[in-house]
Image 1 (tube, rainbow, N blue to C red):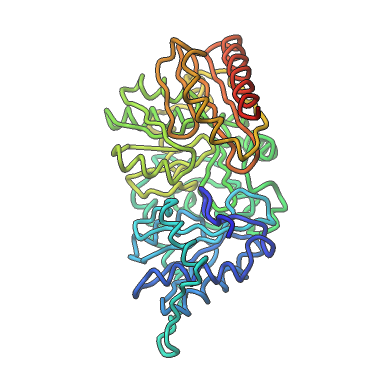
Image 2 (cartoon, rainbow, N blue to C red; image 1 turned 60 degrees about the horizontal axis):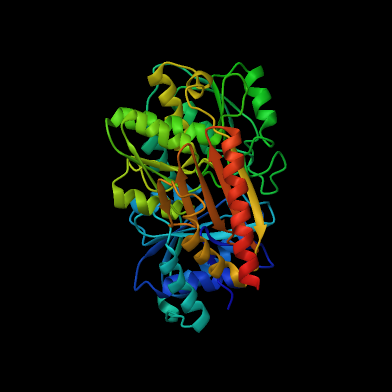
Length: 455
């Protein structure tokens, strides 16, 4: 059987790769692991969501497990409520930022943290072996509406954050799962809110569910015309947030993460921030200048959350806008991140554009080299063994996710693609010519290793 779970759970084209039959089996397998208990289910706005939700719930109920049904909610709401309301598992039907034809299944444990690969493999094994547990006819589980629990999440934010003034903001949920909650929460906090693309629609007709610079050009214009203090946009399931400054400029992702990371360190006085191996070194510079330290881990929010717990981190995040705030919970949370970023502006008594000017931009280059999937492990092992002479004066070498070499004034990452026959190379440096040199050396080196592996 092909591997079902990736770093973000199960993903696939709805009714082709991810069918109702598979959703039923996932629900049945997950429930088979649980003696007695209750699961919490949510979904984003995708048109295939209800079909997959019904199938998933049927599988869970047939194993004798009760279900609470949230309906359409952001992923972090499902994750938070799973722990807060003492559910055994939370299951979110979402493909996050992927195009509309995709959907997915992401599972959270009772602590509101997504399953790691070892736990996911246990579910796969049950499905592969068809080792399902079916309840007796009189012990089939019950499904109840749980949408009222969303109020607990609203209170999580409104009872912990308040503003001194009425901020003028624009929110763009992109017709996704934050369409109702994001405007509601900001209004409860006393903000003047202009909401655009805030009608739930699983076809995502207004823009891509991935909030990037290109798709947010209309939002940038609206923020400027509305004379807003800031604009916020979310991805399809609301675990990512990106910002637009008061001038209508897209806020660079790495710099925004660096800015907020340093702010948290200054507030705490000391602490650790977790990010992944591909994030910009501007984060390290900002955090270290504020008195903290950075720990780098594998790409993906599950790895970030795990490392945050291990290192007792005060904050963690990925440049894509998936930020984790451990004071609240351990799932990336777009709405919470935007509220806390706005609170930072209030505490710093400054505008976003001016604060971002304090964070340096470093030239970053990305290249990819074709490498057959069958040779990836061999190639990466040779890269690990032989890269030292290429950069003899390196400062640090990380191997948690590919090979990342820190240099004086820059760094390079060599990392195999998880979905394509490619080796990806990322290089960043203080100066463009240094980034070019690092990339040139690395490309020559990796191409040689691949040629030798093919010979």
